[in-house]
Length: 289
Image 1 (cartoon, helix red, strand yellow):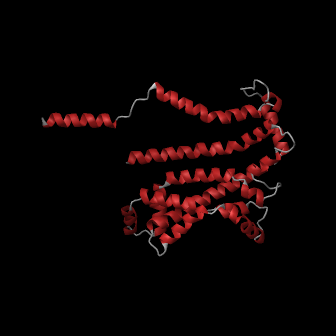
Image 2 (cartoon, rainbow, N blue to C red; image 1 turned 180 degrees about the horizontal axis):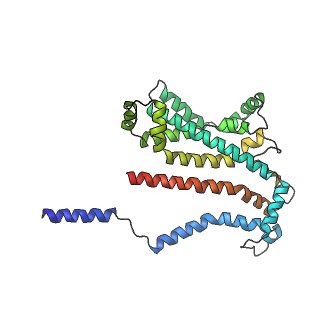
């Protein structure tokens, strides 16, 4: 009876451990979600390859044509998109690197280091997320002007090198993903706090760093409010340069969409690269678990 019960238990555990087979309903739902997700990007391509009159017809076109390259050339002639794209790449890259690095360091300090006033500092950091950015625009602009950074991309980079959300996000992840025993083992081996951070914490929290990096890059790339205040039309980011495309009484939507599509390509590339790292990190953690 004991052997039979053991065999039954093994059979049940093996069935429970197997993954469920996907049915046609699963693939149908995934296909619908994929179509709904990709359709806005596809229709942007369609609009970027036609004129306003063609899009306003009783039967609007559903397929793109070769006019998209001509509309893109017009967009590049009307607005400094190349300059804005270059500036946005610099700003978003610097802000992403700075936010991920500083937020991970601060998160490690709040999660694993004991120092006086840690709870109060963390509460103050989280409380700053409830303060709207609009309240600090005037003093921030005055500060940037005093430092001679107005109309320079450093004025966009410096105020966003670290965020309260990033600090809180990394603190929560480090608290749950890095055991205290692992930190203590590093100290017992003679490593200092910075060596423990580099050799133990960073490899363990790479998935969270990739997520934070992707979110920060997208937020910095799409930022319009602060760059349009501190930068001029001669030295814009890509979002600020888009406003030059929508001038006139009846702007050409095809040209606007062509410029928008041109500024979206780097975001898609970054999303694809960091998305792979996120999935790889999650699968690696699952295998280890």
